[in-house]
Image (tube, rainbow, N blue to C red):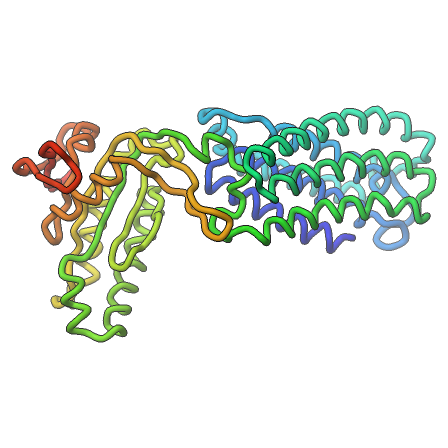
Length: 411
């Protein structure tokens, strides 16, 4: 049981991390709910009488019902449809919440194994059944609320994963009732029922998640805002001028070596130094997004800075390879729709709209080694940005000429 609790807790941490990276409060809270329930299941096993400690103490008796009630609070919190600001506030405190959960688990484990108050005392079923029944009633209400909410999500989206979460929370509610009722019959066959219910709940989530596409595996649980929300974003497109002739003159090994050298340096630069999301590589093209989650008010500055830094890094990478092609970069800012597209077989979380399309067109207008930005991006830059105006650009898909600038430096 301890190994099972540890494995399930590790998977729950992975879910919370996925929620943090996608900046989705619901997925983060779902992960915390399963982390707490799995963690306290492990604590119950850790205090098994006659293994690490002598006799049955309160840590052994109370760990599972207490953990299930606490997990129910996270489950109910996850069922709320948060707006963008509230979701981002929760996500910003993700590491704090995770740290608090681990601190509680560690404290309970230490007190329970050390045999110090208040968990040292050996309690009888008569002493705890009444209070635990009252607390369990609260937990059942929390789980019922969460299960109904996720079943409604299933009805709207038709996802097996949403149904599995609703099913699992229903099982955890039943386990909470059974664990309280079975206290007088510890170690008998009926006492093992709640173990089976909890394991079935964990297994249902694992099986449903395993059947989803690995990219956006948990998208069926995302908040509506994450699935489809309007954002003010900046997009960066970069590709290699002369890539096709270079590929014709050199073998695939040389092309792969070049792309590996470029992308191996440029993708971490965009992600780690400017907090942009590298959405995809398409051949020789890099596509990055800033402020997709709505938490980067300075997204235009980040994108413009990343574009200039990309060109500097690319020049350094190719300093001893004059035959390598150079990047052209386009940056544009404006309104876009961020959300998930695709079916079970393949899903992506991207941004869509004219802002994105124009960004791709501006990249095609940039000189090799240069950066072209749209008028909307330029207006969002701080005073002191050094630019050269371009003649009005006639780009495909735009009825009117487009105003754009070559970006030389930021203040």
